[in-house]
Length: 207
Image (cartoon, rainbow, N blue to C red):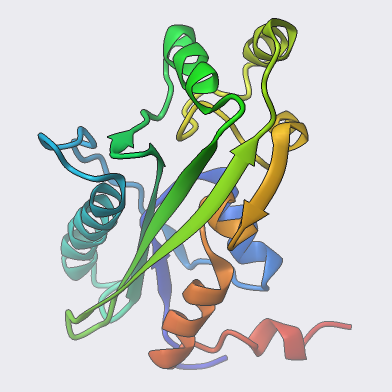
């Protein structure tokens, strides 16, 4: 499609790439950025998700403006945070962190927030925050030990990946499932379509 808007995804997350591919969208460029993801003092989970998504989008957009091949692209970024009450759970990198997260969400409800930010070619920011409530069953020692042994928790917000083995822990989910995976698709499509990105183009060329 000649002259169409290009899309830059400010992430290298396989989950977010797969989710975009699921709805027929292939980013023109992956542009992961590194920022400090530490929560600020007393920062609420929803506010952390919004702030990190915005900072990722702004950092990637600054890089796009210096690249002639990408200039004029839409830039989309997202960040997912798991919260228990006012507490932000980490993106578990150590097995001890993952174990602590699983014990905390065992048998109780928690909330998953994803901030999505789209930066337009003229620098305007469009932002959405999506919240999903998830309730886990009461996890046994065997559940936790076996899940930790699987390694699926590594780098995952709250120490689990709902699209994998941990899907068997979910008793109840209220809201967007794709939000919990890492990119709420309805809100993402709405943002892209609102800025003129041809979200249906690949649908028309299938078959």
